[in-house]
Length: 547
Ligand code: MFK
Image 1 (cartoon, rainbow, N blue to C red):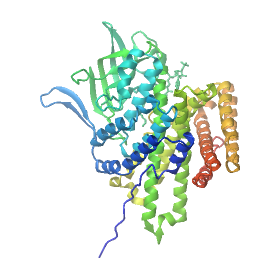
Image 2: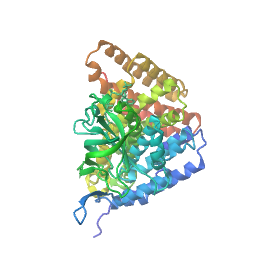
Image 3: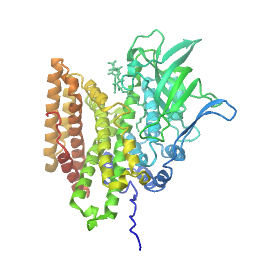
Image 4: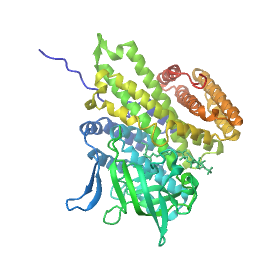
């Protein structure tokens, strides 16, 4: 008797299969996407669907290994990363995954180009995007500080396309006292014979294999809080490759991101350099946070997209109750719901990416800078939540197979679960949104930006959506203005619901912008995107404040 054999889900070129990505690239490039970008995306789309994906499945059980001692008893603290991570580093330099926005070959489009590649690369490379996010963040932060000596020392490495020269950077902020309340940092900085040295414990340092890091420590005699901290630069190893007074205590035993060698470190007088003045460390490291938060949002949509691509393919192949799942109205409805969530998340994330590119190219006026500042935490917080919810639902689309490790599917959910946590939890980012909208001037400027977005939407099919999103945003902002003026706890209590309401309004506006453009250009994907937008609005109400 021949037993039934279920065909596995598979992927086609992930660039060619992505209507929303190609539509957005056409809009941001005003229908002139350079051939070089198109070719790179096509190649990355193929790698991600084929070779890298197969490698990832085969490499499933490998994890980084920390070796404390060599055969002769010397303390070495060496971390060996997995084979796919080494390949991911090679691809990083080849495609310029960190270099692109610093080369600025395509102006603000360079950020869109970079993050389109990252979006394709991320789901098949086991969160190698983590060290890349921090590397990009470190490059951006060093440039913001204007410390020319450190820029000259580090930037050519961080943005190199030569695998021999390329460095990744860490971002050591978290200590036992605070993943969120970084101002409680205990690490001390002492000036010894003209050299700053760091003493303390870093509790959650991602990718300890990096060559350098930016970190925070309190110079002796400084006051408490984030103001009393200073931002330091550390090169981790000496010329012999030995860690400079850094002890790697252990690797973290995490729910997901298991290929990322996250470690607990003790610093026993690690030599460090002040990046910019002996105070205001938290403030000075925020450019890094804003870049890594953007990477976080891109990672969220990348994982959602991977789950959906597999679920769509599986629905063609899996027959139940007499027909492929794709033909079952209820299953189709579930897939449409996931597709619409991805569409909203994607549209907002790439608006944030484009704004970041324009900011770095000096193109933003003060209202747009304010918009970019508000969009960064909002996009991160909502996409992180959507990734977890959508990937949980995606696993269900496979029935029991979605719960079985060697399908590679549970990995998506476990890796997604970090996205609302690291780089600021949903609550911390809700409070950061309030920090960005700190007064009536910032709130009014933000609303003016949304009004201007909405006013550009002239296609009748989307104009009503734009007005709904705008009105809901105004109501939310009225609540903020009013409640803030009372000075009560109600502002903090309502911060998450306020942020989620604004974020959902922004996702619908961002998607409406893309649909409006596609309709105005008579693009073939316009009807499909409009359907996504309508479905997005049905998935849940925009306003989650009034309950
Ligand atoms: C795959 C992609 C992801 C890759 C991930 C890589 C893995 C890395 C693993 C990690 O390291 S995770 C650690 C990440 N940690 C965080 O994200 C910290 C979360 N906590 C916060 O963000 C808190 O809000 C914060 C630490 C900033 C609060 O600290 P404080 O000392 O209470 O800040 P305060 O006093 O409100 O702000 C200090 C200054 O910074 C203020 O400026 P002024 O002094 O001029 O008033 C703020 O306006 C400014 N500031 C704060 N956040 C800002 C900001 N400026 C711009 N952007 C922001 N986001």
